[in-house]
Image (cartoon, rainbow, N blue to C red; front, side, top):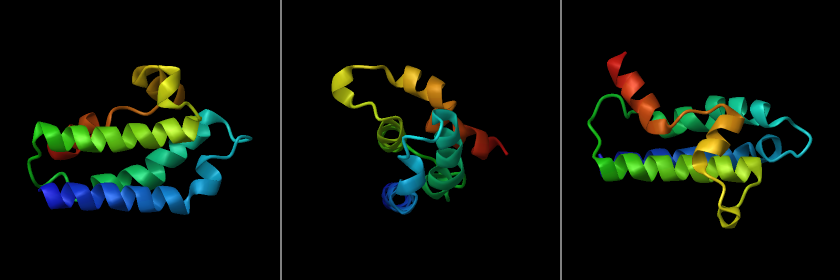
Length: 106
């Protein structure tokens, strides 16, 4: 499962780079950028995660990659010491590990 998680994260970043113009547009509202993130980046990261069990470290890797992408979208660097919950709240995006659990239950 470790390789699948790594491949999923890489696919998510590839999609993020392809949609860079929309995701990092300063004129677009932050909630719209969050919706675009949920529609483009997240499905690529989550592809195939509902069939196999993941360890806590793999979940943490996915959550870290997702949070980094959201920080880049919102334009908030880590040095500003703004909590991840605030960034997730402003973009209306839930944690990726909760989405993994939701997909498994489906």
